[in-house]
Image 1 (tube, rainbow, N blue to C red):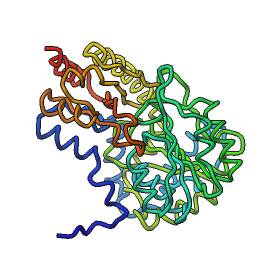
Image 2 (image 1 turned 45 degrees about the horizontal axis):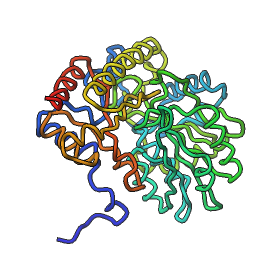
Image 3 (image 1 turned 180 degrees about the vertical axis):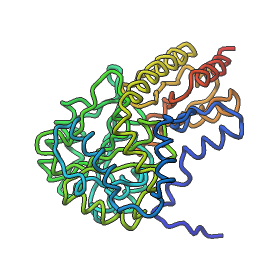
Length: 391
């Protein structure tokens, strides 16, 4: 039977996250592939959702978000960037950051435009750009002195008179790079020169270990040309709630909302009220979670190194990229895809092959991505299973 899928989506198939989680379940593997915690978020936030339901907050919310959440997002953003914004005019609450990305692209980009993105990239970026009819332009991030970086000349060459936007992610999934002030200034200068907007995915903004997170919106000249995207899920271990947001100038916010109103219209009302509680009262939880993840990062990094992986220690996020050439040679495979399948089926540990996040053939094929947003016992079990590679 002829495929019924629209041409724009045919290149993407099923997401690698769904595929690897399916294989992990099939083989009873420890799932270090998809980036969700195997523990719950804070009780006070969950109780706030229950209270919101019982208080009658169960009908459609204001499309751009309930005012209390918009205000909490505004206060958090202003504290971090020094930018004073109008919560009701400049904050749009979305169903997760994934929807924020889609709404931002659909609301601002036209067919024939070009959108620059760094590879490896979060997989929804390519699909969302395809929905707009725009052309993606890729800038590769490669390892250099213990972190993945982009080449300034390659980035400058990617800009043209057709460039509408650049889509960046800091802290960066999957490499763990937290872009420096100098790197952000380079991007900002090119955006200003070419009159391009920046779509900045900052969902891991709270999860940094060795470098301060900086929002590109705070760079000179960028406040009016940046859409800052983030969410509740990563910082509060509530990924299933799907509460995200976009922060931008009133003009860019109107563009985001032009798409958002026809995608989801509004995000689950009781979860929005609870999200406001999280952002208002949750600093202590976030600080504790960051330290928990720092410990988990170091533990998994040491375990992977002992097995034979060459680990790039992430500056942020909850992922580790590990170079696998010694392991793959020992097991008789060559690519990240082959190794991820072998580790899942024969050793009971699931990881993500990051080459699927790249348009350039072979880029990141020497690495696997492991998630460490797990309980200590889960990581210990994964390391124990991986140690069987050595006999």
